[in-house]
Amino acid sequence: ILKIKYKVGAFDPETKTQDVTVESIRGLASMKENGNETKKNLSYHWKIKQNEDGSLELWDTNPEFKLQNLEMGIGATRGGFRQGATYLERQGEREVEAEDGTKQIVPVNQREIVLKTSCSEPSPIEKLMDSTQTIFSKI
Figure 1 (cartoon, helix red, strand yellow):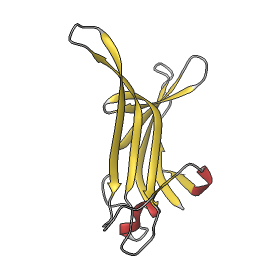
Figure 2 (figure 1 turned 30 degrees about the vertical axis):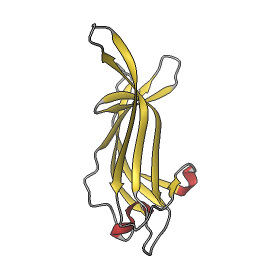
Figure 3 (figure 1 turned 60 degrees about the vertical axis):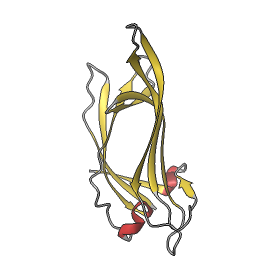
């Protein structure tokens, strides 16, 4: 089980956005901390935008780009010499200005290692696809 503490800001009806911030991760995501809360200061901060049709979009706020995929992976082994790394991967697109002054949409792919444990060889990473494996606790 993975426990994520997060907080959600107030919905801004003018911009139709809402802030979401992840503050800590517990469980398999913090194997090196023996299941305790991660010690590293986490700074995941996103905006949820509501479109005119009622659909929602997730935007990263630093740098600001539209997220198409947000994935967290955790090390698949619990102990021994083979332990995996916990990572957060963001894929999406953002608008940039070209040299000629035109605006272009460019793809963005960022992977950040949240917590790395010692490995003598690569170990498999388990994707968190099933929400029943994740407990979200709102602060």
